[in-house]
Image 1 (tube, rainbow, N blue to C red):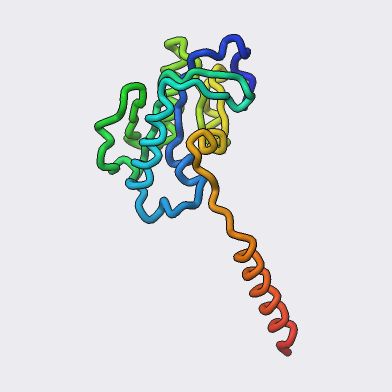
Image 2 (image 1 turned 45 degrees about the vertical axis):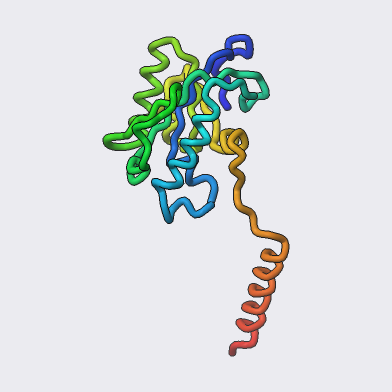
Amino acid sequence: MNDWATPSERRSITLVIDIANVLGSVPDGWWRDRAGATEGLLAGLSGLVGSTVTDPDGHPIHLDCLVAVLEGRAKLAGHLDAASEGLVLVRAVGSGDDAIAEQTAALIRTGAQVLVVTADRGLRARLPVQAGHTGPGWLNRLLGRHEARPSPERKLQRLDRLDEKDQHEQQQP
């Protein structure tokens, strides 16, 4: 996270969330049903509204408002019009990155403390200097979303297959 406010200023925070980036950060099959996966992510986000959590630097922050920016097929999620109080859904007309940059700038102009959740370096470079940013790992931990990791047995199976392939290639003339 960048140095965007002193800990004493970090009370009420508005999160602007790159939903596509957060969704794509956990390989849980979201690509088979992007709208359904988005609905699940939004349901988790609605539970964070109004809560006090630890920011990426370890300081307590209060999440007053979450702005979830949706693009592409994620905009087709079934209950998107039923956002909870404090969870604002923004359906990007064009580029999701453009919408995130615009929403962040507008919030900064109102005096809001904004933390943007994205791993997109190009997008981070476009954000107002007053905005903070962090990667999706922080939000995934808050939501209990963890990267699917292969079991030790699966890793060994993969290594065995690679060894067999190497041996086969070495035997070829």
